[in-house]
Length: 249
Ligand SMILES: NC(=O)c1ccc[n+]([C@@H]2O[C@H](COP(=O)([O-])OP(=O)(O)OC[C@H]3O[C@@H](n4cnc5c(N)ncnc54)[C@H](OP(=O)(O)O)[C@@H]3O)[C@@H](O)[C@H]2O)c1
View 1 (spheres, helix red, strand yellow):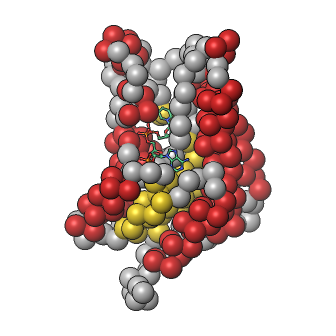
View 2 (tube, protein in one colour):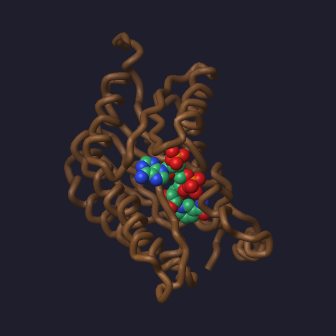
């Protein structure tokens, strides 16, 4: 059981905290003094490593398994945050899934899996966040710049993230009077498993050359944007989709 002193300070839940953008967000928010709950789906060891790295640097973190599309698991994730650290101020829903296929060839089972994690999962996490976040808090959801870029083969993924954007903008208005912000971050191509898996070098190089800044995004680039939205300095940004993509069009 944590002491009252240990329960003070701001608290963040980061889903998808075991890898990629979520993992870097854990690091970044911990550096800002947040106690962090590292959510993950199956990679227990990576999630525990992420939490251990925070505690080794003098911060506070625990790893908790929760499929974001499962109501009871998400409720338990939030309960763990409250039990360990006393409440929740920031929720970053970085967990996500991608499947690429032309619409004409799309397997509906793959579509269902993408929608389950990205749409249902975001709703389940957002609903719990709406019920739980403390005064001054922030929810950050994840879209993708592909919603605007409309790359072929991204139909299922892009449609799922279009839904995330719509939900995010509505929830920001529903939380009137709560002093809680709700924003989506929409990265462009970012060097993580989700982006790199299954792509050959040429495809990666072509996508990396597209933004005027002429490189891929890094998890650090995106974690900085999340940290700003989670901070008091970013609190006037509300009900927005922030396209963090090096200027790709
Ligand atoms: N990388 C890009 O280019 C890019 C661009 C635009 C948007 N995004 C979005 O940014 C977010 C982070 O992406 P990423 O590139 O960092 O992905 P990633 O490296 O593939 O990591 C995905 C994370 O999500 C977790 N996860 C997946 N399904 C889950 C579920 N059902 N419940 C709970 N956790 C689940 C994974 O946990 P385990 O490790 O336990 O499997 C992992 O921590 C995603 O929403 C993605 O759509 C990424």
